[in-house]
Amino acid sequence: MPDYTYYRDTYLGEDIPEEEFPRFAQRAADELAYMRDVYAVAPRRGLDPDEAENMALCAVADAMYEFAQEDEARGLTGVTVGSVHETYAAPPELCATTLSLRAAHYRHEAGYYLQIGRWLPHA
Image 1 (cartoon, rainbow, N blue to C red):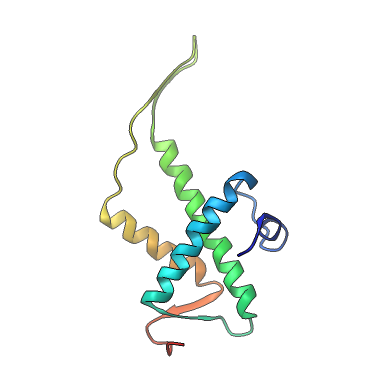
Image 2: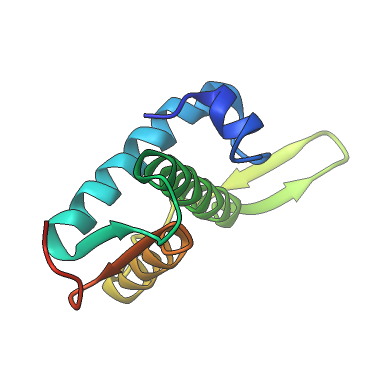
């Protein structure tokens, strides 16, 4: 699994803070493992298999981090600047459609480095 140095220097990632990278990298690895259970997955032509896997993991981790930021921002319902007052709502449960669209987005992001589909021969 790639580390934060790989994410920053090779993948050229800029969004995920170093202290949060291990959590998002593990979640991305789990998502890629799930993809392998459901679809045939192979590195894109011309890419080293390990490099393709690491880049795909970073791409999915970035997407997951961005969704987490959006979810967190939606929780803020009010702010008062004059004597500082903040109000937060409980984050809404994500509907099945949203979860499905996010999974499709993860496949799209990983697809820059991996071929993902039922049409590929399973390894």
